[in-house]
Amino acid sequence: MGLFDLNDDDRARAAAHIQAAEALAGVVPDLPAGTPQRPVHQVAVIGAGTMGGGIAMALANAGLDVVLVDADAAGLDRGLARLRDNYATTVKRGKLDDAGMAQRLARIRGTVALADAAQADLVIEAVFEDLALKQALFRDLDAIAKPGAILATNTSGLDINAIAAVTGRPQDVVGAHFFSPAHVMKLLEVVRTAHTAPDVVATLMALGRRLGKTAVLARVYPGFIGNALFRQYNREAHFLVEDGALPHEVDAALTTFGYAMGIFAVHDMAGNDVGYPTRKAQMATRATDRRWNDLILKLVEQGRLGQKAGQGWYRYQPGSRTPQRDPALEAFIVAESARMGITRAPVDEQQILERCLFGMVNEGARLLELGIALRPSDIDLVYLTGYGFPAAQGGPMFMADRIGLATVAARVQQLHQQLGAWWAPAPLLLQLAAEGRSFADWQAAQAGPAGAGAAVGAVAGAA
Image (cartoon, rainbow, N blue to C red; front, side):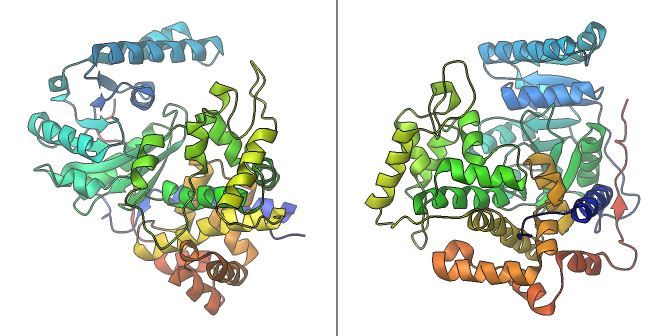
């Protein structure tokens, strides 16, 4: 068997691990038992775009009253229409009746006046991913929100400490990172800042569970848990294409591993232009001690936006979402490698998987030693519920334990020598490998004799 192959016993152990991880995720070791929760009856969602609308639906589905705020009347109308369409689709699929749809829609009130958020127990910001914009909004919310209201940001990776710092109530500020579509995806990253109050943490963790989501606690770090690891996966997939693989080869390795879709097919589905302005702007200030990949920017500039344009990393027949190899795109990739002075070489399936997956494990170890993630099983849950990691593999950290940390660490060190700064080994990974221990061993040692901590239950004040 290869490193990534599984037998029935492996799959059974992964299933047991996932069940235990779900039970543990609500245990917060430094949250005192009996920590009270703040009552949550009404929630304001700021931003009626796809994410804000999805969050509003998730809240309404759980029986909460929602004020959906958008500064633009046309944007609000589009958002409310999208909500109605989404609910109508659910009715057509037989998962909701007309009365249930009407009941949920009645819980959501749209407005263009931010002042209408003044009486909300919880405010969730879901505006464009721009730090200055979010800071300006939080200054306004600080002025109008009632005392004790929780101010949450849905940022996917910005510095929430910097957002909290512009308010006079940093203890009330927290990250609530939903995943799109928010009314469907089961993951909620709850991100506490340096000053977030314990009862705010308890309330958000419990709210996630009320919404039917897996709530995982993180601290402030670029990308928190999920996107911090995803950057490693994404970066290496793109480097592999420059180094000798083609998009369909990378995607084939990933789907053989167990992903429903390969990363390049996912890019095409989501749109290669997603995040383009941010990536373009970052080029001027990024570090010069390491390699970067700009192929996706060039695809956007060529109009290769993905499925919606009929071409991206693959080509698509009119009306079809089935990716097909594109000789023109592949020739462009080969030419780009030559332009960069890269001698392309064949890359086999195991090399593809090692580079895409072991970078995530290495970053996960770094998050553990920095205290960003509470436990390896939390990292696994984030990836299983938010990023499509194959359940049979149990999550990236569980997978690494199964393979053996000595094997993973040795390969990370080799890749560091070959590829440079991105692969600097996490000290915790090297330590555990040298000691013959696993991430599970580390987690057990951190938990102590009774796995102390408060398990967060239902939302206080829930209807």
